[in-house]
Length: 511
Image (cartoon, rainbow, N blue to C red; front, top):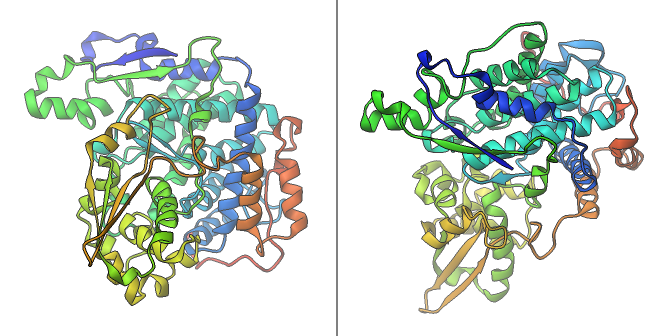
C-alpha cells in the first residue's frame, strides 16, 4: 500500500491534479491488475449475503416504497429490481435506489469499522445495476466491485466523518463512482471527475442515525448509489466537478471535516498548515484486497452489538433467574458507548415504543432481549410486543454502558490479532454476587468461534429467504452467483424473484 498525505491548499497554489486524492483514487480504479481468487470468492459471498438480507426485507414499508418509486422508471434492457420478475427492468439509478434500500433495511450485511463506519456491501447494488444495463460480464463486475470495496474501505481506514457529525455515505458515494469507472473501463480523467462529483453531492449529517432514527437510515446508502450512477453518467458526457474536492480552499476537508476544526480552534489562516489525513491506496500493479478485511453479520443489529449478542447467549446459561439482576454494566469502546450505548444520551434508546431503526441502535435493548431469549431474529426480536414486554423493559432499564480505554484501543488497533468490537459485561445481582465475562469479536468474525465461509453465507441466504421465495429460485440464484462464469449480458441472472402476487404494493406517489 502507498500512503497519501492529505492537506488543504489555497486556490492560488494551483494544486496539480496528480497530487489530489481524487486523482489517485481514479488511478486505482484504472489499474488493470487481476482480481485474486480469494477476493473473487469473497465478492461472490457478499453478493449472496446482500440478496439474502434484501429478500428478507422485501415487503417492509421502506423497501416497498423504494421499489414503487423505481417501478415508475421502467426501461427495456435496464436493471432488475429485487422481488420483481427478471423480465421487468428499470433505469439503473432507480434499481440502485430500490435494491440498495432492500439491502440496508435490516442492517444485516457486511461491515468495516476503523476511523469511521461503513457497510461496503452497499457498493454492490449500483455497480450491479449498471453492469446489467450496460451488458457487462461477471468478470467485469468482479473488477468493479473489487474497486468499490477497496476505495470505500481505504477511505474509512483514514478519514473520520462521524466526529464532524457527517454521515458515512460521504465515503460510500465516491467509492461507488470509482467502482463504476472500473466496471465500464473509463479513463482516469472521467473517473476523477466522477469521484469529485460523488463526494460533493453526498455530504449529509449524521442526524439520519441520531435521535428518532427513521427509514432514511436504509435510504441513505441507496441514495448514494443513485447519486453515484448519475454522477458517472454526467462525467461520461464530458461534464466536470468541483475540485480539488478534498484539498481545496473551500473543500469538504477545509470547511466540514478536520480543516473546520483547525480553523475554529486556531484561526482560518492556519487551515493550510496540518496534514489532516494519510490515506492508504494500492500502488500500481498491487491487487485490491480490502474486501478481505471486512466481515458480515450473523445477527440483524448494529455491528458493535454482534459480539455482545453472542456474549449474552453465553452468559445467560449462568443466570437461573433474570429478576435477581440488580444492574448490568457494559464496558466497551468509545464508539459503542457513544453511538449505541447510554453515552449517546438518546432517550429513544430506552423507549419500548421506539422504531425498529432506533432499537437496533440500542445495545441496552439488544443485550436485554438476547439475554432473555438466547436467540436473535430479524423480525421477532424487534416486534412491538417483544419490545414492550414488562420484564424486558425492567431488565433493559438496568443496563448501562461505559467507555473502557482498553476496548477503545482495541477497536482502533491496526493489529488484526488485537482488533476487537465487543466488550466486558459485569452483571451485578441483588445478593451482592456478580457475573463477569467478555468477548472481543463475534462468533461469525474471521477470528471468531464460527467464522463465516461459503457454507454459512448460503445457509444465511436460505434461512432468511425461506417461505418468501421458492426452493427452486433459491437454488437457481446460488448457482448463478458463480460470477466469473457469467458472460456479457448474462448478469440479469443475479436477481431473486418472488412468486407472483406476493409483493406488497406501495402507496401512490409522484412517479
